[in-house]
Image (cartoon, rainbow, N blue to C red; front, side):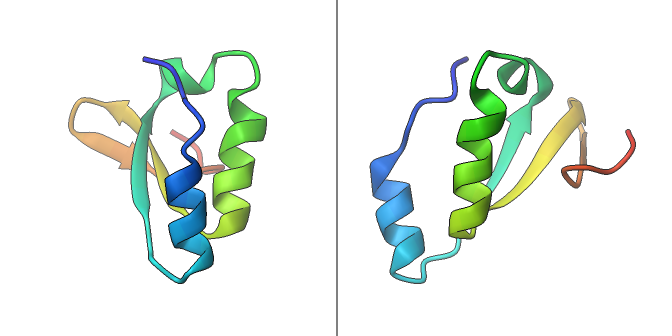
Length: 63
């Protein structure tokens, strides 16, 4: 699964809509994914990283 640019989400975040997302580690390992995710986080997205099928962690936390 690729991390595609989502211009609609960025527009909605700018309007105050809250987004929550869960990303798989494999997606974040792709070249450029961290920079792209940083753009969403800076725009206001609330993101977590799936550590297993049933577990998520906050970005930047151990796990």
